[in-house]
Amino acid sequence: MTVRPPKALWRPTVMTDPLTASLDHEVRAEKAGTLGRLLERLDTRLENLRTVADNADPEEHDRILQDAADALWHVVIQRELCGFGQTQRFLRDRNVPAAVQSRMGISKASRNSA
Image (cartoon, rainbow, N blue to C red; front, side, top):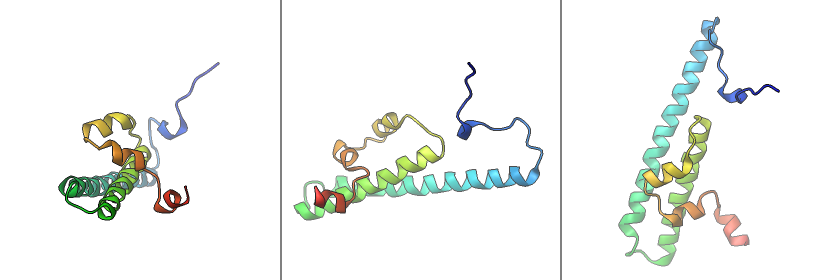
């Protein structure tokens, strides 16, 4: 039995087509740029949450918490698309609150229907 790496991780050792190599470089740059912008948005949302954690009314706090959870969801998805793993370590290193983690990926519509 042979074991091969996942197709997403496989890269030919020599790219003979310069157009393919250029396109691959552009795609990787776009993924990295998007991840950077999403991380900035997440940091802003988490800072908002920390700033108004105790001073906001429950409805406002809920909205800010959901904004942070949505931003986290987008970052996690983009990290996966970039090939990064270790999501739990990322969450721990970024000090993402458990309340935000537990709402990650849950939309307002799905919370209201539950």
